[in-house]
Image 1: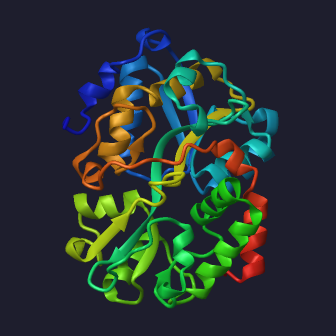
Image 2: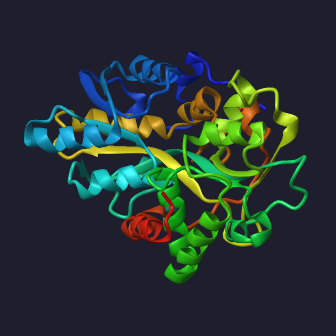
Length: 340
């Protein structure tokens, strides 16, 4: 296991050649809805390597997208970074991104983790998996569809239907199994709820530990974070919590992305391309795991101890660009089955 990313490793940017090998000048205006303090090292590494200064504006993804729309051609934004396929697709639909022709990105980012029109690219991923209370559940569901089994009646906790993570998961069920199966799946989980949907992913894990429910859906990095650092209500209960990477004998576990794209009217477009290529470099990819407990998107990149502790898994190879087309239908289904 390699050690977590250092600034020296970031500056080295091993594994990439071409434009990043030469220093550039100027600035990069970054609009980001990633709210992780550890990302500061990621940005510092880019500046150290290229000489490009990053000016950062942070905020809610929808607010940033709306701001870029309002600014129009006068927008100073060069790059938008955000979390989840649904928000990346929202930015594309809003017309605030542009296509990128980069041999580096094409070579480094798997096809299914990038937009079909090259307007957005995934740079880190989180598997959305099943966690369960090992003291109460001896036969946990092995795939997403099995969550609807009546034997789990009153045991399941989940976030609300407004959660982008749940919306994208349902959209992937639609893509993999069809609308009818997806509708039955959503209705079946509602029937198995232990309580009305509430809270975030960490709250679902806390509810599992406290006994409010026995089975929850959560992204992997929320649990991996509790292995690495203190997370109230979760850390210390690791022996109680089991997990399943779903559908390992079928399509594989659903993943959602943290990713980004170049702003439609980027005033520093060349620098923006350099930044996206930097995010695909080995050291930056290592940092996504070491700094924020995420899985890299580039194959063969070392995992941090907390992420590696979850084990290897088969990820669903479905195109997330295709999944994104099902998001409106996913929300419609949630509304119709009463998933609040």
